[in-house]
Image (cartoon, rainbow, N blue to C red; front, side, top):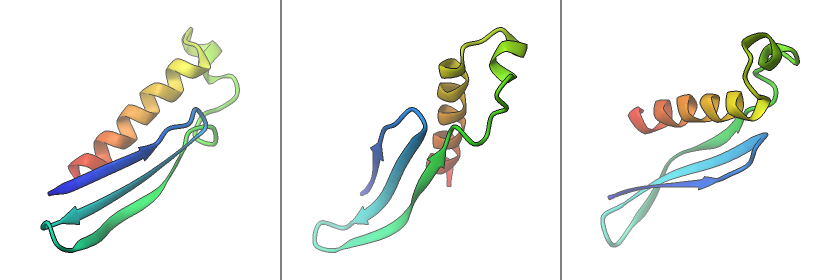
Length: 69
């Protein structure tokens, strides 16, 4: 079984993925998704979206990539 743990945050979101067979645990991956450094300051105004909605969209995209991996 694989387990994905997420430490939510609006600017930094941590994650870790482990695998277990019921007796042993193995770390598969871990990291931080940096939501604030991947957007331009004026990006939300240019697109007519709030900064938070853009962060949530980026978070969805990055978590989807992690789950597929």
